[in-house]
Length: 314
Image (tube, rainbow, N blue to C red):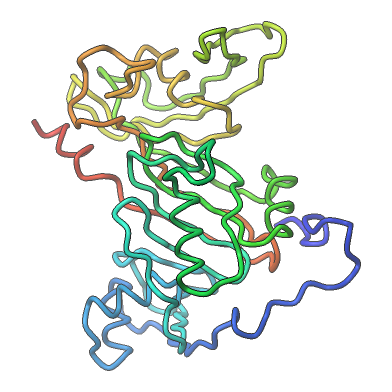
């Protein structure tokens, strides 16, 4: 892990201390037999309901071996250390487009649905940011959501927003050092010829704002690298895992087009009419990074949309 002193901006010489209310106390347990995290929580918390156990997970009140874990189906093995927060989760956000996966005094991690922008050009327009700002207002939090990275309107998955200017600056200025793993799952057209590989090129928008790929720098282009791994195929379509080495506009969509296997449902870069799931079949399922203030490693992962898998079963 990079030293936290290399991450924190040099403007302030004062040590950064987490507020007491952002460091919930936890009861520690040792796993005795293999089980899932949800089952373990229900048993450890005197038989609480599945919904209450899921609420604890959604409120980021559980750690496994010191790392926050939110997946209810996470596999536990004997010897693992599980911490369960004594504090009740904060007021829940009830919105079909945005689900809070993790929140503390400095950042909030959400899972975004399709059909909503990360941030709108008009600050009052509907977006993940506007939803979070309203949630902060209702829960009496004196903060706003600061955008540090984005997903396209029709891409679903994980996003992190800063709640303070300090956290925003740290994340923006040290993004490549702080983020350790970003992965997507895509349903693409056709059978992938390669099991795994890498696509790299220069990307630049044309006058129509369509991102184009070049082997040589066209002047003003941005270098982009995408790693891919084929997970499953039925001949007509393939499920592909993608890991970003860089994070450029429309990078995955353009690089999959370069491979001859564009994302299904992509009206901009894909094959017309190939839309087996009724949406852009791209989902940001993993986001791992170091907390911008505490330096704690954070690991977040969501399940692959079921419609992606069902499309391969048709």
